[in-house]
Amino acid sequence: MIAERLQKVRDRIDGAALQCGRDPSKITLVAVSKLKPASEILAAYEAGQRHFGESYVQEFQRKSRELGDLPWAVFHLIGRLQSNKTKAAATLFHAVHTVDSLKIARRLGDQTEHPLDVFFEVRLSPEETKSGVAVEDLAELVEFTRSREKLRPRGLMTMPPWSDDPEASRPYFRELRELAERHELPDLSMGMSHDLEVAVEEGSTFVRVGTAIFGPRKRRP
Ligand SMILES: *Cc1c(COP(=O)(O)O)cnc(C)c1O
Image (cartoon, rainbow, N blue to C red):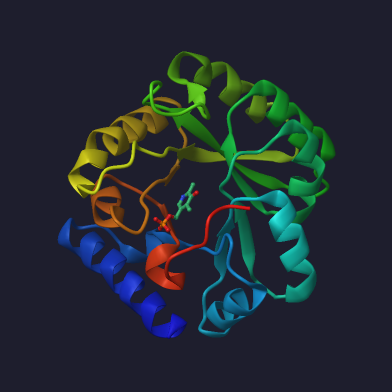
């Protein structure tokens, strides 16, 4: 079941990439397993999936004990990070997609024991969301992160306002790509179950897909 859904999503990504002349192997599928049990992560892992996205530090802390050691698995934090959870996040995750302040970047850089991949979450629709760095504050945050030995600035992340029309995401994805180019950041974390094709067309290198792989979720805890 999960194996089939993973394959369908991978086919969607590859199809969209080939359609616009991109190399599908340059696009990483992050399977978003938030609010799903460890057993489903294991099932996806057994089907060959290696990148996983989680939104809640504490929820993943509990689940990670059940997972044990999974060679080559890469865990991405894609949910909002509070400053009192940076130490736990740096321990549990290989990448954080939601760095949006100097305070969070400083704490992660001081507390992580391994090199940590950093994506900056950018707020492109101020009226819709609270999280994300404002475009005018991005340069300072990127420069600061580049100065920290253990942080590896990788790219930008954004969440467009929800719409059931995937095309509504396109202007946000395009703006994110232009910003990443301006700041010489190679990666783009964008696209979810409903708009991943549009994200791939606009240059995404990390698509974060939950529902299309694991099915609908319960409410957040
Ligand atoms: C939950 C979540 C996703 C996955 O969303 P789906 O619509 O289930 O694919 C992607 N990115 C972030 C930041 C999320 O919180």
